[in-house]
Image 1: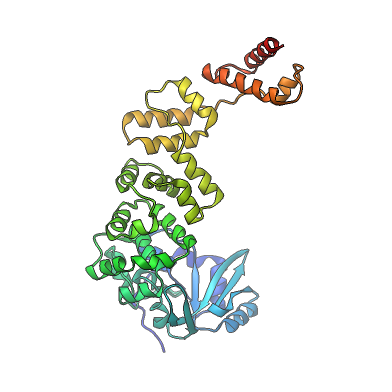
Image 2: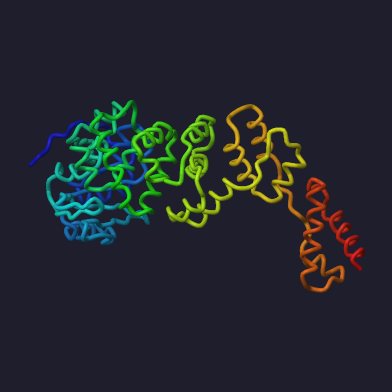
Length: 398
């Protein structure tokens, strides 16, 4: 059955990509689906491009191979094949409809019905599809919702959330980027009622969505709404300070999810890192942001250099963002930190050995003593001065 498009647009630039054009020539019925269509219509940069087709997976593989395109069966049970052209992969998924859901997983069946496939999507702005000629197919009013800055579930919000409780957090992720105004009362009630269901989600999925919410250009309204509905307490039960996060965002601090998490948290950072299973790098950085000295706007250069000797400049800059607002003094401090070279203590164990000290604990003691002297001097003494001080201490200990 031939469908009438909801709208026709000039084909977006990404459709001219040689690799994608080759794939869509092999599968002329395929359409771009999801975020790429949404962002193209919103005039935003398009990142990942996914395709959908009514063809079954084995037929997709055959069509790609006939066109001499490498086909990788990345998820045949779920209808997904990856086409690889020029080293770049594009996922192609057979149209599906839900047969059964349990709040976390769905049992699906293949279909040739584009509307049925779109009905599986979470929000109307994500249920759009785009043909290679610029035809846009919109079954649930997503184009108008995008224009109105409205994040709306496809169908009944309670039903859609019950299919997968992660959609609560996905709502706030998209609300942070595309939402304006306040959601309708039915949606707000559904989000509030779904809070207990968040406990059944894997912590990895929760952190993935929370990180994306915090990484939005301005997550303030989303975070406030999460707090009002009880969602924030459910995902960060260790304690939060929304006002502190909002001040950080308003100050013009970098769009940095971990920096914002450090501002938001009031509870035990280690406990949060353990529960959400943060990566090693994320865990270390979060701990650094919340612990250690913070230079003050009135600190002299010697004091700041001493802090730099034990901390990366960016860590101190981030702590300064957390410590103050966008007042002139804090701006000046961050500028100073960015311009200052990190002082490096110039001595090593071999320098002590060269003075005749036998290997053992005494070497470390001497280095620590000289480093304390160097720090007290504002990290100014150079290698020659440090060697002289070391020699003096070795001689005294004779």
